[in-house]
Length: 102
Image 1 (cartoon, helix red, strand yellow):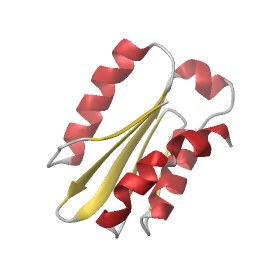
Image 2 (spheres, rainbow, N blue to C red; image 1 turned 45 degrees about the horizontal axis):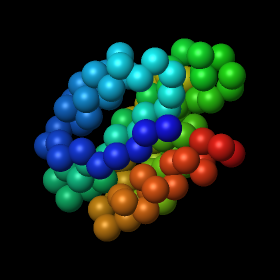
Image 3 (cartoon, rainbow, N blue to C red; image 1 turned 60 degrees about the horizontal axis):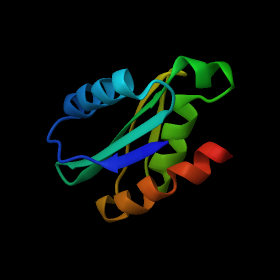
Image 4 (cartoon, rainbow, N blue to C red; image 1 turned 60 degrees about the vertical axis):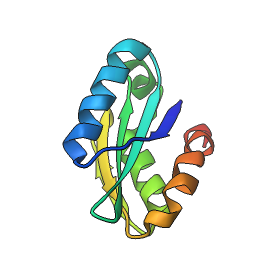
C-alpha cells in the first residue's frame, strides 16, 4: 500500500504519477492525494491481482474522501475522489492502510 501527497496542480497529474508507480509496483494499492484549488483530490489505483481478491478502488476512494468531507467512486481498478477540507488530507492519506485492511 502506497499513499502519498503529491505536489500536483491538476488531477490528470495524479493519474499520470499513479500510472508510472503502478507500472513499477507490480502488486498493490496506490492512493495519491493533492490539494488543488484549495480542495483535496485523490486518485486510487488497485492492481488486477488485488481486484481479483476483492479490493475495489472506488470503495477505497470514497472512504478516503469521506475523511475530508467529500465523496468518490469509480471502477475496481481506478477511482477519483474529492473533498472539502484540505487540512485533513494528511489524515486521510495516513488512514489508507487501515481502510485497505478493512
